[in-house]
Length: 198
Image (cartoon, rainbow, N blue to C red):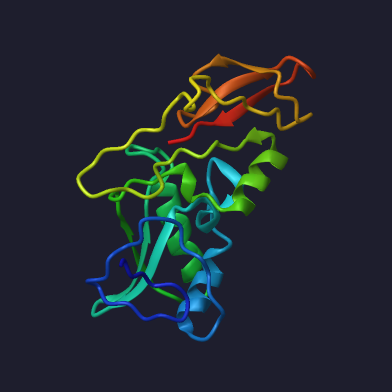
């Protein structure tokens, strides 16, 4: 079973990262304080959600060389990674905490790692949250892709974040960023982004 450094649990450098999002525990030591500081670090492209809610923040661990914070990009080549690394370092430095930020690309991030809070914040911000992808629990040595179709053969409908209607259509497979598709609601006629599941 994978282990990881959540608040209240010290972790060695040899620890294994989890295969999914990290749930915060009750506060009882310095690790919780570090996690609390990182709650202020938001996704540079979607400032209403923080890195933990997005599932990007993977671990906080103490090693022989100091504190390490591990993050996973939403996709390889994500242009916001350097900004996220800088934001993590700066948020901790303001509180007098020095840390090294490591990027971990395996297991690959999945939209299934987003917390329910993140999904609701996306909807309120005007971005339709992703459908479950089934890729959130990777199997060793197996590459998984999100299916575009359901078991019944039809693509799941995307609800408009403005009016809630499912009478929507994709107008472009790429929206404001590569991880989103551009949709249009046929009921309220508003365009919106849909966070693609993967």
